[in-house]
Length: 106
Image 1 (cartoon, one colour):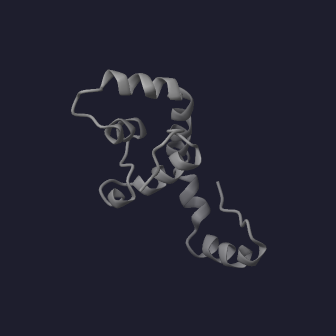
Image 2 (tube, rainbow, N blue to C red):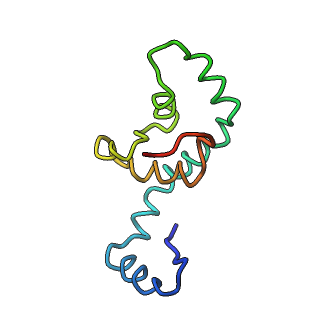
Image 3 (cartoon, rainbow, N blue to C red):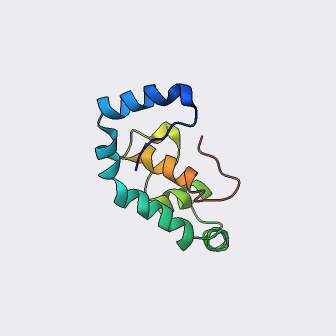
């Protein structure tokens, strides 16, 4: 896994950060977590999420609670310090379009 520049003017900055912080090795050490987040996208299509919302309707679980359980980590940016790798998993869930409907990471 690597960070690739989308803008050529940032290429040197990104390259320097990759080298300085040894990002390739850090990202490679989390491949399994990234794989799991992307796998959840296929295991939980919108129809499955809708079904779960119906099952838990009227319970104490909110939509955000269900999504947190599915992701296996906190889903709000304000909660990234509550559990290791929360930010990484949020970013990967958003990139994978895991929840595919109205919810955005706030």
